[in-house]
Length: 150
Ligand code: CA2
Image (cartoon, rainbow, N blue to C red):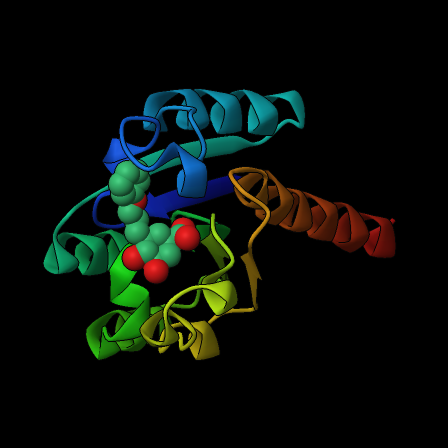
């Protein structure tokens, strides 16, 4: 199983600013953890981060036929990118949206996700653990699928 972990704008700054909201672990440490977590479960997680909407859309398009799932934190694009919504709808790869912070406890404009309707589900407010939880969902789905065939 191959999972694409896609992070949007400013998430490369994890651990460098606003630790009270986003924690003090770095983006690189998060990716290393997720790669190791996936590998420990016989899967592969590839991490991609971009501050550019088009690059995120290109990565979503390229995931078709290559990845079994996408774990995506679209950053602030969550709240207004209909282009990312359309890209998620255009590919046949299930996506789980993750937010490190609880977007519902923050400013009003963060309460709405325009991208979540194209996702299997959304996890928010669990800190960086949300990424691992989303990965676990895909890994457990594979197990369910295999069990039902054997
Ligand atoms: O809670 C989340 O994961 C967010 O997707 C993070 C976005 C924010 O715009 C969303 O409303 C909620 C912002 C990411 C900024 O990441 C930073 C990380 C460290 C330091 C500064 C920014």
